[in-house]
Image (cartoon, rainbow, N blue to C red; front, side, top):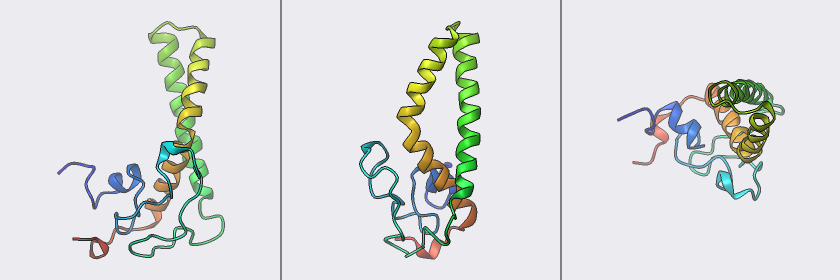
Length: 128
């Protein structure tokens, strides 16, 4: 079946689906539409899970995003500079361009990881 099937945390995280039922999208728009990029639904359309259980719930997602971005940046620049022999300026220039383009996805991914840490999948909520 693989790691990216309904019922797995990876499916819910990378497809940005509800962590409880894996049916409904967590955000109003697709990731790369850049329209209402940061607007998250209040509740799941299918099972009714509250995506905002308390004020400041996604504060922890900020740390996940920070850690991911930091390690990605170090690895990205290191590969471009030491392996591909690019200059530091070119390496950081491309890093900035990549991070600007993927900023919304990183934001959404961190929120999906955070809510998946706190909510367990319930197979009874799934559409058959």
